[in-house]
Amino acid sequence: MRCPFCGHDDTQVKDSRPTEDNSAIRRRRYCPSCESRFTTFERVQLRELTVVKRNGQRIPFEREKLARSIRTACRKRAVDEERIERIVNGIQRRLESSGETEIPSSMIGELVMEALQGLDQVAYVRFASVYKNFREAKDFEDFVEKLGGE
Image 1 (spheres, rainbow, N blue to C red):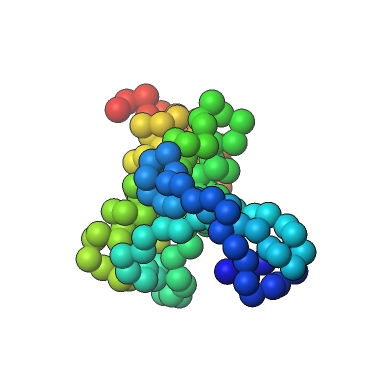
Image 2 (cartoon, rainbow, N blue to C red):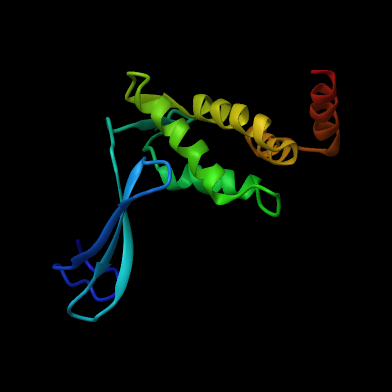
């Protein structure tokens, strides 16, 4: 593993342990060249996933991008990082086990919406406002009104 600080190619693993949900291995590493320490995570990847965007563009699936969008929706809410990690892991597992290598971005959006709806209503509305491209306050009102009717 290359050192992220100095670029040295030969770092050493000092400690390995599973993450709390056993979905990854957390490794503490040490660089003998610059003496820095850093953490890496090793995850099982069942298949390479490609996201097909609405405009037809194909991009590689990025787990961190998914996590970032969920964290943004949950910002300043009482949602701990562990819950967000479990959601991201669950969505990634569902995508990888779907049997498809090309995943429409709309499918990912719907999975996130489903997860956030059961987690936090404010985060759900925040994510929906971006995902469904709300343009004015009326869009929010209509969406929240539908929530009340469910």
